[in-house]
Length: 373
Ligand SMILES: Nc1ncnc2c1ncn2[C@@H]1O[C@H](COP(=O)(O)OP(=O)(O)OP(=O)(O)O)[C@@H](O)[C@H]1O
Ligand SMILES: CC(=O)N[C@H]1[C@@H]2OC[C@@H](O2)[C@@H](O)[C@@H]1O[C@H](C)C(=O)O
Image 1 (tube, rainbow, N blue to C red):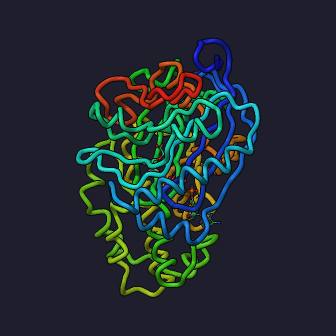
Image 2 (tube, helix red, strand yellow):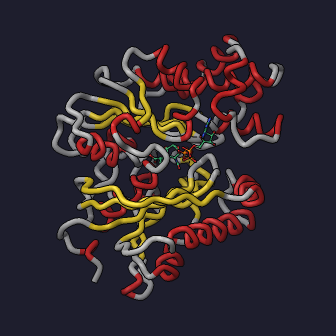
């Protein structure tokens, strides 16, 4: 029987994430007992091809139908390819690809067949991490905060700090590491800050056929249009108290705010909007954090990082500053969360998703038992 089932010792878990920027699948190993991070292991990345990205884009915002089925097949296949490269894995945490997220409406949809993956790889798979939280009144996102708490302990933090993920969407976790565990009231506050890279990617893709504004090259040449920025910040989302979460395309109309601008000014303004959402969000932190540690692709955009450094009155550094891997933190999060789910431990709480009580969300497909759900 796999070790993940008994509450003994650490598990070598493999997490996998296909994020909202649709660039590819990240996978990484974490050894954990579900509470402490004992060791980080190997990692790997499988980019989506241009055609695969198109197929995923075509399914965004849809809940069913042929596009969704095609996306699900692709996501399962891409993960099977990538995850089969890893050896001696005891448990897999499979996030899948979010296609639609409407926690106060239709729910949340992450595609990918966890059961099929468990059968294909012969390893138990935890998947569908978000649905239970939504069913219990939570936002279903962000879910990385419990892992961020463990990371704060792992790096020996003693003062409150923030983890900021700048992916397609941005999300912030305020962690007070003086608490014993993540579920303690006051240990965590988390929410999505606003769009991060998705509108920038979408604009440069549509106008220039580029996948991203690499190294902020365009934004650096442009000027932020303050009128557009003010209209953006007037969105009701920014006045809502956290926890709160977003779908990838919730702010897609912000591209309209920059449509008259030159390429450089448009990208600079969208970059300014991503930074402004974070700055606005930081006001919700119960105490000033000692530092902000940035993860996700946006940390590689020097213009975005500089905007944050200028606006925030604490150090803003990539997570590499404390020895973590900002390309793999989300994949590692789902490895860690998978062990918690398999052991019946919570993965979200009122401070992280607004859920009414502690929830350990996820479906466990254990190959050794046939095909139970
Ligand atoms: N060198 C770079 N310069 C500028 N931007 C970059 C660079 N490298 C990555 N990015 C941005 O980061 C994005 C990928 O970030 P990441 O992989 O963290 O997103 P994700 O995990 O898919 O999203 P999410 O966290 O929302 O699920 C790219 O689409 C691009 O916009
Ligand atoms: C619904 C969904 O997939 N949300 C993602 C997305 O990407 C970033 C942000 O929006 C965050 O809320 C979440 O992902 C991270 C991994 C999380 O759950 O913590």
